[in-house]
Length: 351
Image 1 (tube, rainbow, N blue to C red):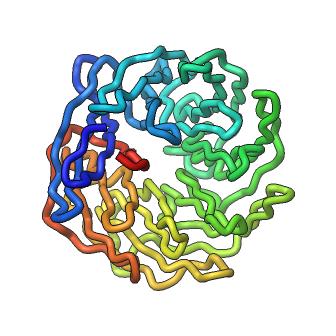
Image 2 (cartoon, one colour):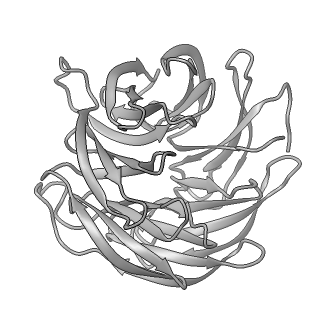
Image 3 (cartoon, one colour):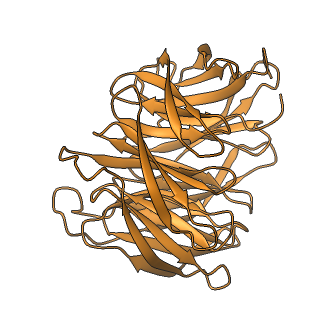
């Protein structure tokens, strides 16, 4: 793939009209944090969330709209340009999150219609038939945001035998068994009323998981039983400093590769909060906040030396310097103009 000075490459998904370049390939100079736009891909409306497969040969995107869809692309190994493979309807509204399952399927969460999908992928990586559709039903504590189910993310466990769905509308993390392409309900863990779970990650120790809650400004720490698949709430940590009284909606959540630090984004406070993770306990401590150099940090990616942030409302992608030893972040002043960026997907392979 195209490369200069060992450039770090990443794709940006965005809210865009079909004729606009909603998916862009960008580069980060690891020497000085400089960002550049390489090229863009049009032809899909609101590709607000994008993911790459393990060898970065295929990219998948949602089309977040009332008649939702998912789309697949072949990635040119030389210049990173995208060639459409195909697309498929999710039979619902506003798909907002995707995951690739180790069993070879594509998983999707549909926010407004409150359901999840699994699609088969063929030998070319094209999207095949829908093998599962599970509808969530119910409502939560807040009538303004939890009047119905709102599936916001879908995350497989490490071996792909189960998936975990954060439903903002129901205040639940719901678990499913994956078998022969089907999703069978296993159980759920209930969060405090009005929490609004959004994104979810597993710790590499296999014994803990974390969820960020959009409506009550917290991160939940879970003890995880990898044999039974159970989650148990063990801590709730605030995403905001105690003296902040403004409106805020946490969004994205990521661990560092070594599992020592957890990061979450605050939309409103416009910051990334960094927590130290207790070894063995998984508990969070010593929060630090760093400004994102923009407005509404919807999504971000954690690299070894940098964190790349998509600031949706200020139309910019910003890079923060990361200290691998302390996990602390500092602003670099480096920014790239991108209209309504909503997702950062690094190309995690040797170039």
